[in-house]
Length: 171
Image (cartoon, rainbow, N blue to C red; front, side, top):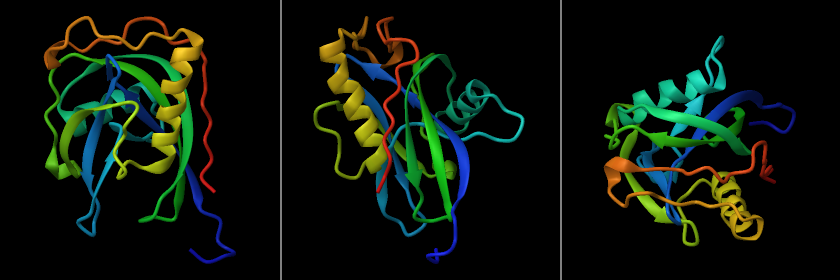
């Protein structure tokens, strides 16, 4: 991107699926073959609502559906591979089934990670937003808990303040 070029802006959505003090992350492969971690989700297509876009992305990336709850955060990500900045909104999600990564979508794995020790390969703005949500949960009395540790029964119990936003800008 040249110094005079303004990157195009686009809207995106990401799923925040938690189990206790852990969060579900995707392992994704870039075009150059390198691996990074992210939250499930992607871009909002023209005519879609954020909930419709997230439902589509969950189906495409993880071959499962989920109950999409309140928006719990947001962040801005300047892409390396395309001349665009995506404004991601993060939504609390409860999956209906065990996710199956779709390699044709670039998803090479899914796994839970501890909120306190996110992988270094996680996209920085998402890691910062998730870290702020996790840090805020202890001080704000937000409960990130699971009713069952079995992967097929993930739950995000009520406790996230409605409308809470963690806005992170990448420098």
